[in-house]
Amino acid sequence: MTSDREPPFRTGLSRRLRWAGALIAAGSIIEIGTLFWNHTVSLLLFLGPAAFLLGGGMLLYFWPTIISIR
Image (cartoon, rainbow, N blue to C red):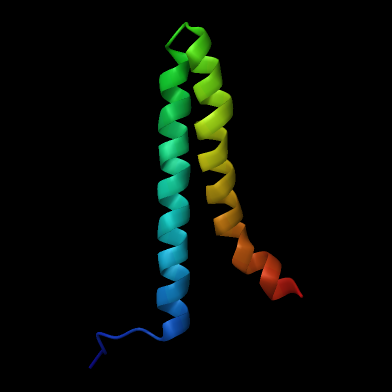
């Protein structure tokens, strides 16, 4: 019989990975959208919010690995 409750470390890690995936997906969607838009604002969206979302998602994804190495 399996339990419906997961250990606390699993729920925290899976929640963090879910957020990281959502940030990376949102940043990728913005970057793909700016590739087809020929305007100066597209560069600002590419360098601003899209890069911030991708970078935040990658940091959130790799943070548990960095912390566990110590």
